[in-house]
Amino acid sequence: MRSSSSPLRAAIIDLDGTLVDTLGDFTYAANAMLRSLHLPEVDAGVVERHIGKGSEHLIQRVLQHVGAPDASDPRAWDAYQAAYRACNGRWATVYPGVEQGIAALQAAGLRLACLTNKPGEFARDLLAAKGLAGSFDRVFGGDAFARKKPDPLPLLKTCEALGTAPACTLMIGDSRNDAAAARAAGCPVVLVTYGYNHGEPVRGVVDADGYLDSLAELGGWLASVRPTCPAGSP
Image (cartoon, rainbow, N blue to C red; front, side, top):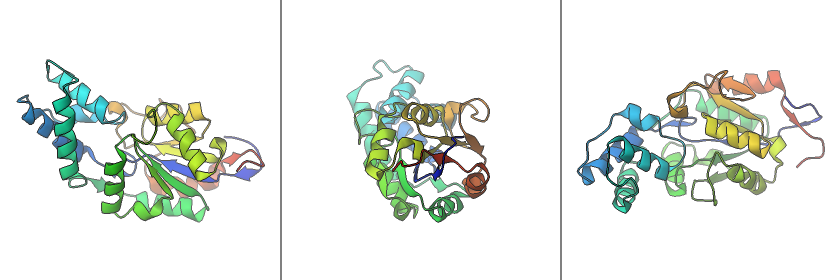
């Protein structure tokens, strides 16, 4: 990866598809929204392809999929938000290996932030419900900054909040959105292979510094790859 003398200082971890499998919650909320508009429901496969770019994107794509006359109908946003708030975490499960991965990052002395395109309210409540909230120094949702991933702004702002340089801050995600944001921000990036990524594979397809089948592999990856950042960086 990067050659110099100082180790990583922090890690930024995505939420949906990386830490927690939330497909069931997304599908429930999307179908509740569709029912409220008297539109046909969709299956989880349709929803999965559109996770990762924020609620607005998911809502619009689902409405387009069912042939809604107005994919920007404001009633859809209100119905979706209400449904998601009511079900947040109900059908969600923490992926195997997450606790071990977080423990490995903490053992390496890294500060941790969770950065997601999910609204911040939902992200914080979900992390708390799944017993993960205490692992993170900072949690930022898609409404925290002016732009969402894959724009690099959220990563740059999160690095600023952590007090670390991007080159010293590892991004861990599940999609090309995470990878593109990391590359543009100047962060090293590893991707999990089990996430959503719009229904497409990531291993060997999306540009990343490494691929993990489980976050439990993080300790070994850190030890073997020895990712570093420029000397003198915060």
